[in-house]
Length: 231
Image (cartoon, rainbow, N blue to C red; front, side):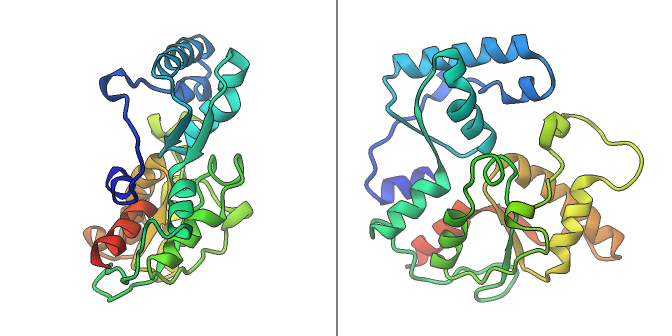
C-alpha cells in the first residue's frame, strides 16, 4: 500500500513503533477493559500526531476507529485502503494498465472474499472489485458473496482459538473458493488472508489435492501493485 501511495504522489506518514492495537480483538473476546485501554491510548497517539485522515488496511480497525472510537471521544475520518486506492485509480494517479499473472495464467481468474467488517458492517463492496477490474483481473464470484458473504472464521476473536469438532469455518470457506476454479483468492483484510490461507490448504487436502498447490490468498492491493509495476 505504501508503494502505491508513493506512486500516486500521496503525502502520508506512519506511526511506526507508536502504533498500537486498535483494541478490536479485545472487545470481540469480551475484554471491555482492555479494549478501552487500547482505544484510549490509540486516540491519544492519533491526536498528538494531528491525524486528519486515517487509512487502514484492516477492516476490524476501520470499524473500531470509525464506528466505536467516537463513543470514547475519538472522532476521525477513517477510510479503508481499497477505498482510497480506488479513488486514486479513478483520478488517474494510479494507472494499472497491464494484466496480472497468478497461478501460471497470463491473467488468471480471481475470486473475491468480502471481509465481514468491510462489507456487512461498513458497506464497502464496490471499491475492491473495481480495483480488481482495473488490474485486468476477471472476478469469479462465490455463491455467497456481497451482502450474503460467509465469514473466513476469524470473526468474534475466533482467529485466536482452535475450533474443535466439525469442519473449520476457514476450510468451509476455502472449499467454496476452491470450487470457483479461480487461480487466486483476493480479499481486503489481514485476518482473512491468514484464515483463508489455512482454509484453502485444508480444502485442497480434503479434495485430495496437494495442499501446497492451493490457490494463493492475496490482498487486493498486491494485485493492483503488480499491475501498476507492469504498466
